[in-house]
Length: 280
Image 1 (tube, helix red, strand yellow):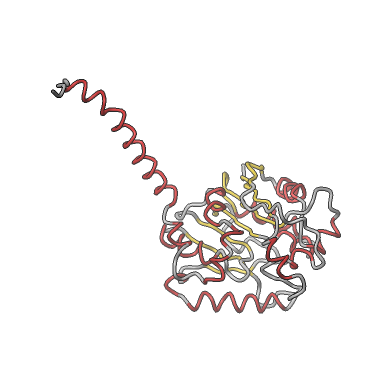
Image 2 (cartoon, rainbow, N blue to C red):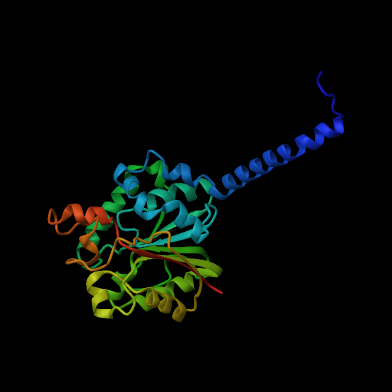
């Protein structure tokens, strides 16, 4: 014969289950708020398949979340190159009502290959106006200035794998100073860069494209930034950084062509530091 239970006993038995369900709902809702549509943009059909294949090395969602970027911000991406991050940042920030500013090459940038990169980038923007019609473009280079945006008006400045170029051009300090001027107090500087082994000399950094983490931190601190946190999101333990053509030996460049191609593909893209700085 079944045992009758009081309503109080039944409630006591069900209460832990109800609390667990509520907590799961809260976590799911919280994740949706944190994500702000970023994952949908990353998996969007507007992105090229070749670029999506590189998500496994560049971890765009984790990287942007680590930097604390949100789509209502005014964000400057420095030297966007072929537009890999533009594919993600521009439509995402457009959806959120923020402003994406692309600080790329000047029309007469040197070496000349940079002009070709710039033309390809402009073609990317023109090809999909529904995604990129609100991109603000400004030149930024050795002729360093704050014309990219008003001083103190930017929430975040992001740069992906560019510091080695500024070292080679002997204007890395000026670039970091410009980022500091652009940012609001409390603004974020997010940096990813090919990571050299500790104590690598400057000449080797310029030749190889790998930069020591200590040097990047020093450049940022000298400009006035505070290092808030570092992350291993984009680390690659398989990369020993010792390659015949420097970082360009590895994918995506694969500068040696078919020579040891399978080995370099197995390594993947370079080992990278990921650093978040704050303007006090």
